[in-house]
Length: 183
Image (cartoon, rainbow, N blue to C red; front, side, top):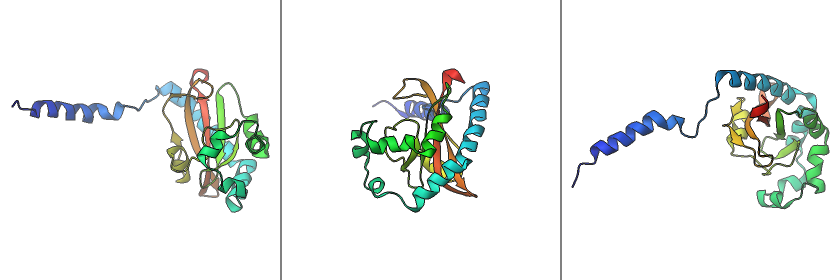
């Protein structure tokens, strides 16, 4: 039987040295600076009274149909369904739509439990509870995802999520997809 120790040692060294690079893509400093500038603007949107009040209202009294919604039911709904349309037709939805540009692919706001409050276009999932893009902002921190292909538009994007703050308390999240090629 051959000694496997050198092969295991080599594999372990690879994991330790290269593991952090797998699946994690850092942006070059000039592109990160452009993302950081967008983050500042997105934080201002999250602080706007239209967004803040929509999240506060939904946290206080979520509509019954929201609490009964599941991921599967959400996926079955058409973009033209009245419930779906209510999220982009609301004051908060209209506010987000007014921020769309060649850089901003999509945006959505979630309440404290991860359910949708408003968006620019229908999201693939109803709730982002348990997802870092929602959970990290609920700790008061900013979340930045990896560069990925947007499943709806096909654009290469990076998602940014910021907390919606009521004073110093995070009460929801605002997620924005940025078109990398337009930054």
